[in-house]
Length: 163
Ligand SMILES: Cc1cc2nc3c(=O)[nH]c(=O)nc-3n(C[C@H](O)[C@H](O)[C@H](O)COP(=O)(O)O)c2cc1C
Image (cartoon, rainbow, N blue to C red; front, side, top):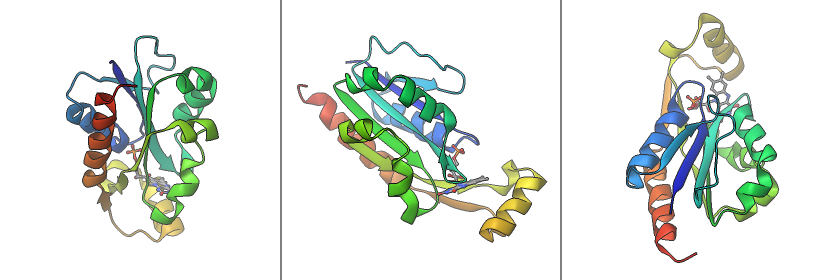
């Protein structure tokens, strides 16, 4: 059973989560950065994980485009998991609605992996924006490694079951 982990990230946290999933799934899953590889060949894979980060309430455009363009193909895969990286816990359910409804219904595993805003990675302009719009004075590290681990555990378990 071949697995692909498809993701889009702006400052690396969703990419890091995707790499951690790859590691925890045993290392032979293929990582696909949807910002670089917009039309990956999915024909050989039977299980898929798709995820990305939220910025200004929006899921990464590359993830949205990919999911809507390839929806029927994705729905035909035996095992699908979805993940999000975001800071606002109370908005997570709403953010998940940016994946197509049918794909959300299909997904056997979903995960919210938290997020981080590291001021050292952002421009002066973005820092001013974050201070004004969100009242942030400094970096916030709100990663949820336990959620990544739990997602991988559930996904692995399902991979072992006959589809
Ligand atoms: C400019 C900016 C806007 C953001 N807007 C939101 C938001 O609307 N809701 C939210 O939950 N998190 C928001 N975040 C937090 C990101 O989801 C978090 O930093 C995440 O880890 C980014 O992942 P990435 O490094 O893969 O892009 C924002 C972060 C930045 C820098």
